[in-house]
Length: 453
Image (cartoon, rainbow, N blue to C red; front, side):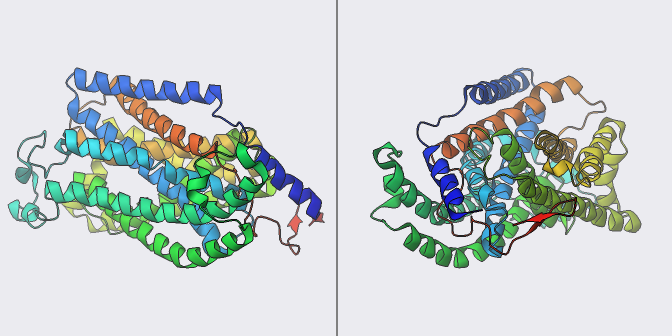
């Protein structure tokens, strides 16, 4: 690509910010999801299904945390590896972190309004005396009493999420400042007013880009390590402690890696569905979606590998406090159908489809497989949480559809509203990033055997 063509694309990305707003259809759909979520909450609490409803809300909150933080990790990967191919998607990935305000607020409300009743170690547990459930007596419970003290538990989750948000926004600030300086010079008074608060007195995009690169060399490894630690803590505390006598050492790693897969699938959805609105068309070429699809394929395979690596030792050791967790989810008829559905949506379907090289380059088929993965991960999170919350003998299909699906879509709709309003007011690609332009040595080989630079 010539220098003039590249500059034309940069100018187009900046001009697209002028007057851009959230599309009406998007508003209608996402706000409809939010309304469904509110109706689901009202129906659940109004019909006396409080434990089930709290469980559904916990699934949705945890899903949104994984989506927002897992999505941002794509930007961390691009910064840390000096990757060029994914640079056009870096700003969208950073936008996902802005949506983390939604689960942060909802998690605080969850703790304040009585959500801890779903945890058997809580004094307010809906099932009675939690100590009586311990397979080896009360000593097992009391050995974790300090760590699972309700106040410490709640503050720990909120503080961990705040720490991640602070680190996320430092990264976003570093990434955004050079772009806004450059865009402000071109848009002048047409630029959004809030840019000035972030830009300050900065006037040189190249100087800001250098400062951004230096700052991120320190921030990226800190954020990567913090992500692994905090997401593991969320997994152990928010999900595993629903059954405090079951444990798996790999559970934290499985969750934070599958959250990256969730973020990749969400990026694929935005790269296809929002391509025209965000003017990403000139940037999201088939080679970009092809590479993104390869990462999704690798994430899908890793999800299955780490799941099997947890199940296998539990199977061959055959210890009751470990096997019961799996037996409830994989054998009981009220949950085994969901386990099979998770296997199909999270592994068999995306693995098989993403093996196709050509499909990863086609806009709407690629959108479809990304949607399959996102849906499968919702069922996977639901399968981890809901059997520990609901102890009945029959699966309440109507409640799941109205409450669980509704609350999930409601939280995702609210999350999408926040992310979209951020992306509407900034350049959708990092226009001042020196790594946005293809390296002159880059060669993309096509299936027919031809190549172009």
